[in-house]
Length: 338
Image 1 (cartoon, one colour):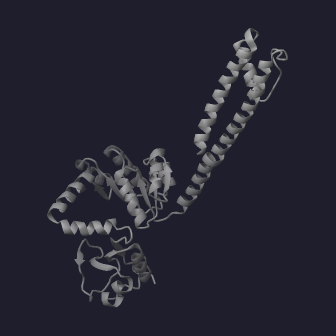
Image 2 (cartoon, helix red, strand yellow; image 1 turned 60 degrees about the horizontal axis):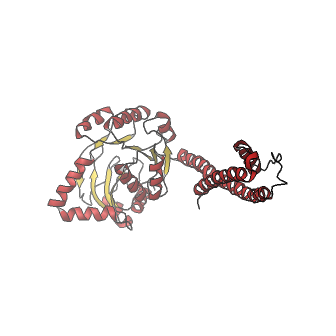
Image 3 (spheres, rainbow, N blue to C red; image 1 turned 30 degrees about the horizontal axis):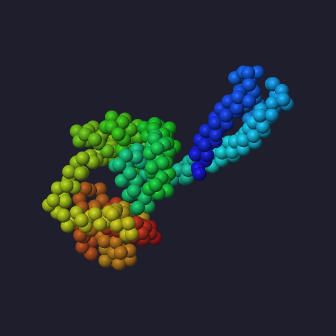
Protein backbone atom coordinates (compact mmCIF):
# COMPACT_ATOMS: atom_id res chain seq x y z
CA UNK A 1 0.00 0.00 0.00
CA UNK A 2 1.38 3.42 -0.96
CA UNK A 3 1.98 6.13 1.65
CA UNK A 4 -0.85 8.24 0.19
CA UNK A 5 -3.36 5.38 0.47
CA UNK A 6 -2.23 4.66 4.03
CA UNK A 7 -2.71 8.34 4.90
CA UNK A 8 -6.25 8.31 3.50
CA UNK A 9 -7.07 5.09 5.34
CA UNK A 10 -5.75 6.44 8.65
CA UNK A 11 -7.92 9.56 8.22
CA UNK A 12 -11.01 7.42 7.62
CA UNK A 13 -10.20 5.26 10.67
CA UNK A 14 -9.63 8.32 12.84
CA UNK A 15 -13.00 9.83 11.91
CA UNK A 16 -14.70 6.46 12.44
CA UNK A 17 -13.11 6.02 15.90
CA UNK A 18 -14.11 9.55 16.87
CA UNK A 19 -17.76 8.93 15.91
CA UNK A 20 -17.78 5.52 17.60
CA UNK A 21 -16.34 7.01 20.81
CA UNK A 22 -18.80 9.90 20.93
CA UNK A 23 -21.79 7.65 20.29
CA UNK A 24 -20.53 4.91 22.66
CA UNK A 25 -19.92 7.22 25.60
CA UNK A 26 -23.30 8.85 25.11
CA UNK A 27 -25.14 5.51 25.04
CA UNK A 28 -23.26 3.97 27.96
CA UNK A 29 -23.25 7.17 30.02
CA UNK A 30 -26.97 7.61 29.89
CA UNK A 31 -28.82 10.84 30.57
CA UNK A 32 -26.06 12.16 32.83
CA UNK A 33 -23.76 12.57 29.82
CA UNK A 34 -24.31 15.32 27.28
CA UNK A 35 -23.00 15.21 23.70
CA UNK A 36 -20.27 17.65 24.74
CA UNK A 37 -19.26 15.33 27.62
CA UNK A 38 -19.08 12.40 25.19
CA UNK A 39 -16.96 14.36 22.72
CA UNK A 40 -14.64 15.47 25.54
CA UNK A 41 -14.19 11.89 26.79
CA UNK A 42 -13.51 10.72 23.25
CA UNK A 43 -10.83 13.38 22.69
CA UNK A 44 -8.95 12.80 25.97
CA UNK A 45 -9.06 9.02 25.34
CA UNK A 46 -7.82 9.19 21.74
CA UNK A 47 -5.11 11.71 22.64
CA UNK A 48 -4.09 9.55 25.65
CA UNK A 49 -4.21 12.69 27.85
CA UNK A 50 -6.70 11.14 30.29
CA UNK A 51 -7.55 14.06 32.56
CA UNK A 52 -10.18 11.91 34.32
CA UNK A 53 -13.75 10.79 33.93
CA UNK A 54 -16.33 13.56 33.78
CA UNK A 55 -18.89 11.24 35.38
CA UNK A 56 -17.81 8.41 37.68
CA UNK A 57 -18.01 5.09 35.79
CA UNK A 58 -17.33 2.90 38.83
CA UNK A 59 -21.03 2.14 39.09
CA UNK A 60 -21.40 1.72 35.32
CA UNK A 61 -19.81 -1.62 34.23
CA UNK A 62 -20.96 -1.17 30.62
CA UNK A 63 -19.28 2.21 30.48
CA UNK A 64 -16.03 0.81 31.91
CA UNK A 65 -16.03 -2.08 29.40
CA UNK A 66 -16.67 0.28 26.49
CA UNK A 67 -13.95 2.68 27.72
CA UNK A 68 -11.45 -0.20 27.95
CA UNK A 69 -12.18 -1.46 24.44
CA UNK A 70 -12.19 2.07 23.06
CA UNK A 71 -8.76 2.82 24.60
CA UNK A 72 -7.29 -0.23 22.86
CA UNK A 73 -8.88 0.75 19.53
CA UNK A 74 -7.70 4.34 19.93
CA UNK A 75 -4.10 3.32 20.62
CA UNK A 76 -4.07 1.14 17.49
CA UNK A 77 -5.58 3.88 15.36
CA UNK A 78 -3.18 6.56 16.62
CA UNK A 79 -0.19 4.26 16.05
CA UNK A 80 -1.33 3.53 12.50
CA UNK A 81 -2.00 7.25 11.81
CA UNK A 82 1.42 8.32 13.12
CA UNK A 83 3.22 5.67 11.07
CA UNK A 84 1.22 6.64 7.96
CA UNK A 85 2.02 10.34 8.35
CA UNK A 86 5.69 9.54 8.94
CA UNK A 87 5.79 7.31 5.87
CA UNK A 88 4.09 10.00 3.78
CA UNK A 89 6.60 12.64 4.88
CA UNK A 90 9.68 10.45 4.61
CA UNK A 91 8.82 8.46 1.49
CA UNK A 92 6.80 11.12 -0.30
CA UNK A 93 7.50 14.76 0.39
CA UNK A 94 11.07 14.32 1.59
CA UNK A 95 11.84 12.11 -1.38
CA UNK A 96 10.36 14.71 -3.73
CA UNK A 97 12.36 17.52 -2.14
CA UNK A 98 15.63 15.59 -2.33
CA UNK A 99 14.77 14.46 -5.86
CA UNK A 100 14.14 18.03 -7.00
CA UNK A 101 17.42 19.23 -5.47
CA UNK A 102 19.35 16.43 -7.13
CA UNK A 103 17.67 17.13 -10.46
CA UNK A 104 18.40 20.86 -10.15
CA UNK A 105 22.10 20.06 -9.67
CA UNK A 106 22.09 17.80 -12.73
CA UNK A 107 20.42 20.53 -14.81
CA UNK A 108 23.07 23.04 -13.65
CA UNK A 109 25.76 20.72 -15.04
CA UNK A 110 24.16 20.60 -18.52
CA UNK A 111 25.79 22.37 -21.45
CA UNK A 112 24.99 22.30 -25.19
CA UNK A 113 21.71 20.65 -24.24
CA UNK A 114 18.16 21.12 -25.49
CA UNK A 115 15.15 22.59 -23.71
CA UNK A 116 11.67 21.26 -24.48
CA UNK A 117 8.94 23.74 -23.54
CA UNK A 118 5.63 21.92 -23.14
CA UNK A 119 4.67 18.25 -23.19
CA UNK A 120 1.81 17.87 -25.67
CA UNK A 121 1.85 15.11 -28.30
CA UNK A 122 4.20 17.09 -30.53
CA UNK A 123 6.62 17.70 -27.66
CA UNK A 124 6.44 14.06 -26.57
CA UNK A 125 7.54 12.96 -30.04
CA UNK A 126 10.52 15.31 -29.76
CA UNK A 127 11.29 13.98 -26.28
CA UNK A 128 11.22 10.36 -27.46
CA UNK A 129 13.58 11.22 -30.32
CA UNK A 130 15.99 12.99 -27.98
CA UNK A 131 15.97 9.94 -25.71
CA UNK A 132 16.57 7.53 -28.60
CA UNK A 133 19.42 9.57 -30.02
CA UNK A 134 20.95 10.09 -26.54
CA UNK A 135 20.93 13.89 -26.56
CA UNK A 136 20.90 15.80 -23.25
CA UNK A 137 17.72 17.80 -22.61
CA UNK A 138 15.41 19.21 -19.96
CA UNK A 139 11.62 19.59 -20.10
CA UNK A 140 9.71 22.60 -18.77
CA UNK A 141 6.05 21.78 -18.04
CA UNK A 142 3.61 23.53 -15.65
CA UNK A 143 1.35 20.50 -15.08
CA UNK A 144 2.43 17.97 -12.41
CA UNK A 145 0.08 15.40 -13.93
CA UNK A 146 1.73 15.68 -17.35
CA UNK A 147 5.17 15.43 -15.77
CA UNK A 148 4.15 12.15 -14.11
CA UNK A 149 3.11 10.81 -17.54
CA UNK A 150 6.45 11.87 -19.02
CA UNK A 151 8.31 9.77 -16.46
CA UNK A 152 7.00 6.63 -18.17
CA UNK A 153 9.04 7.55 -21.28
CA UNK A 154 12.35 7.19 -19.47
CA UNK A 155 14.81 9.07 -17.28
CA UNK A 156 13.95 12.72 -17.93
CA UNK A 157 15.20 15.94 -16.35
CA UNK A 158 12.33 18.38 -15.86
CA UNK A 159 11.30 21.64 -14.24
CA UNK A 160 7.71 22.23 -13.20
CA UNK A 161 6.95 25.81 -14.17
CA UNK A 162 5.86 28.26 -16.85
CA UNK A 163 7.94 27.72 -20.04
CA UNK A 164 7.65 31.44 -20.89
CA UNK A 165 8.91 32.64 -17.48
CA UNK A 166 12.43 34.10 -17.61
CA UNK A 167 13.50 32.68 -14.23
CA UNK A 168 12.31 29.18 -15.16
CA UNK A 169 14.17 29.34 -18.48
CA UNK A 170 17.32 30.45 -16.65
CA UNK A 171 16.96 27.47 -14.29
CA UNK A 172 16.85 25.25 -17.39
CA UNK A 173 20.17 26.71 -18.54
CA UNK A 174 18.92 28.84 -21.43
CA UNK A 175 22.30 30.63 -21.56
CA UNK A 176 24.17 27.29 -21.98
CA UNK A 177 21.63 25.41 -24.14
CA UNK A 178 22.09 24.49 -27.78
CA UNK A 179 18.46 24.72 -28.81
CA UNK A 180 14.85 25.10 -27.67
CA UNK A 181 11.70 23.24 -28.75
CA UNK A 182 8.68 25.46 -28.12
CA UNK A 183 5.42 23.49 -28.24
CA UNK A 184 2.72 25.26 -26.25
CA UNK A 185 -1.05 25.06 -26.65
CA UNK A 186 -1.66 28.33 -28.55
CA UNK A 187 0.14 30.41 -31.16
CA UNK A 188 -0.09 33.39 -28.80
CA UNK A 189 1.77 31.49 -26.06
CA UNK A 190 4.38 30.27 -28.55
CA UNK A 191 4.85 33.80 -29.91
CA UNK A 192 5.33 35.21 -26.39
CA UNK A 193 7.73 32.37 -25.59
CA UNK A 194 9.70 33.06 -28.77
CA UNK A 195 10.21 36.72 -27.85
CA UNK A 196 11.20 35.81 -24.27
CA UNK A 197 13.68 33.10 -25.29
CA UNK A 198 15.26 35.24 -27.99
CA UNK A 199 15.76 38.09 -25.49
CA UNK A 200 17.54 35.72 -23.08
CA UNK A 201 19.76 34.08 -25.70
CA UNK A 202 20.01 35.79 -29.10
CA UNK A 203 22.13 32.99 -30.59
CA UNK A 204 20.24 29.87 -29.53
CA UNK A 205 18.46 27.77 -32.17
CA UNK A 206 14.70 27.95 -31.66
CA UNK A 207 12.16 25.63 -33.28
CA UNK A 208 8.52 26.56 -32.68
CA UNK A 209 5.22 24.76 -33.26
CA UNK A 210 2.46 26.70 -35.01
CA UNK A 211 -1.20 25.71 -34.91
CA UNK A 212 -2.32 28.10 -37.65
CA UNK A 213 -0.07 27.96 -40.73
CA UNK A 214 -0.63 31.71 -41.15
CA UNK A 215 1.32 32.27 -37.91
CA UNK A 216 4.47 30.77 -39.41
CA UNK A 217 5.83 34.05 -40.80
CA UNK A 218 5.08 35.84 -37.50
CA UNK A 219 7.10 33.26 -35.54
CA UNK A 220 10.08 33.65 -37.86
CA UNK A 221 9.83 37.44 -37.62
CA UNK A 222 9.67 37.20 -33.80
CA UNK A 223 12.95 35.28 -33.73
CA UNK A 224 12.26 31.58 -34.37
CA UNK A 225 14.75 29.78 -36.60
CA UNK A 226 12.03 27.45 -37.79
CA UNK A 227 8.25 27.26 -37.35
CA UNK A 228 6.67 23.84 -37.82
CA UNK A 229 3.00 23.14 -38.53
CA UNK A 230 2.03 19.60 -37.46
CA UNK A 231 -1.08 19.88 -39.67
CA UNK A 232 1.05 20.71 -42.74
CA UNK A 233 3.53 17.93 -41.98
CA UNK A 234 0.65 15.49 -41.50
CA UNK A 235 -0.79 16.42 -44.89
CA UNK A 236 2.58 15.93 -46.58
CA UNK A 237 2.91 12.56 -44.90
CA UNK A 238 -0.48 11.46 -46.26
CA UNK A 239 0.62 12.40 -49.79
CA UNK A 240 3.89 10.51 -49.34
CA UNK A 241 2.02 7.40 -48.19
CA UNK A 242 -0.03 7.60 -51.39
CA UNK A 243 2.58 8.41 -54.06
CA UNK A 244 5.82 6.98 -52.60
CA UNK A 245 4.82 4.23 -50.13
CA UNK A 246 8.09 2.26 -50.27
CA UNK A 247 10.26 5.29 -49.57
CA UNK A 248 7.96 6.24 -46.71
CA UNK A 249 8.18 2.70 -45.29
CA UNK A 250 11.98 2.90 -45.45
CA UNK A 251 11.99 6.17 -43.47
CA UNK A 252 9.55 4.66 -40.96
CA UNK A 253 11.88 1.73 -40.41
CA UNK A 254 14.71 4.18 -39.70
CA UNK A 255 12.67 6.16 -37.22
CA UNK A 256 10.87 3.34 -35.42
CA UNK A 257 13.53 0.64 -35.15
CA UNK A 258 14.25 0.48 -31.40
CA UNK A 259 17.26 -1.82 -31.71
CA UNK A 260 19.20 0.16 -34.36
CA UNK A 261 18.58 3.90 -34.22
CA UNK A 262 19.48 5.19 -37.70
CA UNK A 263 19.05 8.88 -38.40
CA UNK A 264 20.07 11.48 -40.96
CA UNK A 265 22.67 13.34 -38.91
CA UNK A 266 25.09 16.23 -39.45
CA UNK A 267 28.66 16.89 -38.33
CA UNK A 268 30.29 20.31 -38.67
CA UNK A 269 33.97 20.25 -39.67
CA UNK A 270 35.89 22.67 -37.45
CA UNK A 271 39.01 24.56 -38.72
CA UNK A 272 41.31 22.54 -36.39
CA UNK A 273 39.86 19.16 -37.44
CA UNK A 274 42.33 16.57 -38.78
CA UNK A 275 39.80 15.91 -41.57
CA UNK A 276 40.47 19.33 -43.12
CA UNK A 277 42.36 18.96 -46.39
CA UNK A 278 41.80 15.20 -46.61
CA UNK A 279 39.92 13.66 -49.49
CA UNK A 280 36.93 11.48 -48.66
CA UNK A 281 39.00 8.48 -49.77
CA UNK A 282 41.78 9.43 -47.33
CA UNK A 283 39.36 10.19 -44.48
CA UNK A 284 37.65 6.79 -45.00
CA UNK A 285 34.72 7.87 -42.84
CA UNK A 286 32.40 5.14 -44.07
CA UNK A 287 35.01 2.42 -43.64
CA UNK A 288 36.03 3.52 -40.12
CA UNK A 289 32.59 4.25 -38.71
CA UNK A 290 29.99 2.46 -40.85
CA UNK A 291 28.10 5.73 -41.46
CA UNK A 292 26.80 6.51 -44.94
CA UNK A 293 27.80 9.95 -46.28
CA UNK A 294 24.94 11.21 -48.46
CA UNK A 295 25.77 14.91 -48.92
CA UNK A 296 28.07 17.78 -47.98
CA UNK A 297 26.88 21.31 -47.30
CA UNK A 298 29.51 23.74 -48.45
CA UNK A 299 30.95 26.32 -46.04
CA UNK A 300 29.23 29.72 -46.02
CA UNK A 301 26.74 28.55 -48.60
CA UNK A 302 23.29 27.04 -48.86
CA UNK A 303 24.44 24.63 -51.58
CA UNK A 304 24.61 20.87 -51.02
CA UNK A 305 26.67 18.36 -52.94
CA UNK A 306 24.78 15.08 -52.97
CA UNK A 307 26.70 11.83 -53.18
CA UNK A 308 30.08 13.63 -53.26
CA UNK A 309 32.94 11.90 -55.15
CA UNK A 310 35.72 10.20 -53.22
CA UNK A 311 38.15 12.83 -54.54
CA UNK A 312 36.32 15.64 -52.73
CA UNK A 313 38.59 17.40 -50.25
CA UNK A 314 37.00 18.26 -46.92
CA UNK A 315 37.14 21.94 -45.98
CA UNK A 316 36.66 23.74 -42.68
CA UNK A 317 33.09 24.92 -42.19
CA UNK A 318 31.57 22.17 -44.29
CA UNK A 319 28.78 20.08 -42.82
CA UNK A 320 28.76 16.33 -43.43
CA UNK A 321 25.28 14.88 -43.88
CA UNK A 322 25.22 11.18 -42.96
CA UNK A 323 22.90 8.30 -42.22
CA UNK A 324 24.24 6.95 -38.96
CA UNK A 325 23.53 5.70 -35.44
CA UNK A 326 24.41 7.83 -32.38
CA UNK A 327 27.44 5.58 -31.81
CA UNK A 328 28.65 6.16 -35.39
CA UNK A 329 28.32 9.92 -34.95
CA UNK A 330 30.46 9.77 -31.82
CA UNK A 331 33.15 7.90 -33.79
CA UNK A 332 33.08 10.55 -36.52
CA UNK A 333 33.38 13.33 -33.94
CA UNK A 334 36.37 11.56 -32.39
CA UNK A 335 37.96 11.26 -35.85
CA UNK A 336 37.41 14.95 -36.54
CA UNK A 337 38.90 16.01 -33.20
CA UNK A 338 41.74 13.50 -33.00
